[in-house]
Length: 239
Image (cartoon, one colour):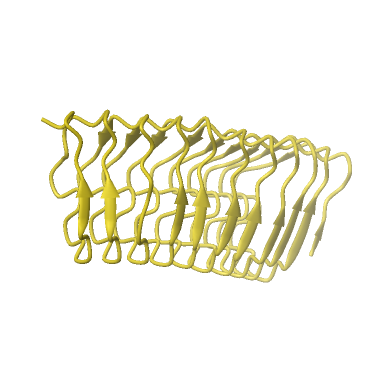
């Protein structure tokens, strides 16, 4: 473990990189800035507590922390940057505080044992590949305020069975749900005007889909390899 002084204000870039024997760390509320890759590949790190004051989890901050089981995040947090928790393969659950507005690209990619994540209503942006290959994630509810389901955001989430999309969504990007082999149905809100190529490709269990009235074009391979798809409702708006 590491004890950090109560006067500490900043943890620098790569400060604890490859500290493979580090098990726990508690970051005091005096800290305002944590540099990128600060805990890169701390493969033995199991528990992290971050005090009030930190607003951003930097790029690749906990990437490859494969033993990480629990992380306690402050109410001051607003942004989770690219790859922040990528490949944290032992992380099963995470609760994001109501202050978080942005989850950037690849933030939780390859968190293979993540089964539960609660996204607060404060979130307005979730980046591409954010939950790519979270293969045990079973359900997700997108907050009302997010407008775009970015590319590959839930691709290869094999256990995903329940997806809730709000009326704020206007577009579903390419490969967004590709390879979600347990997804049997999904309601696409009427607010959606575009669905990208391969968006639901290889959704082997998908049985029915209703295309909303705002859609004008069904892109190439949108539903390719959906072997069990037996009912598709296409509106007159599709030309």
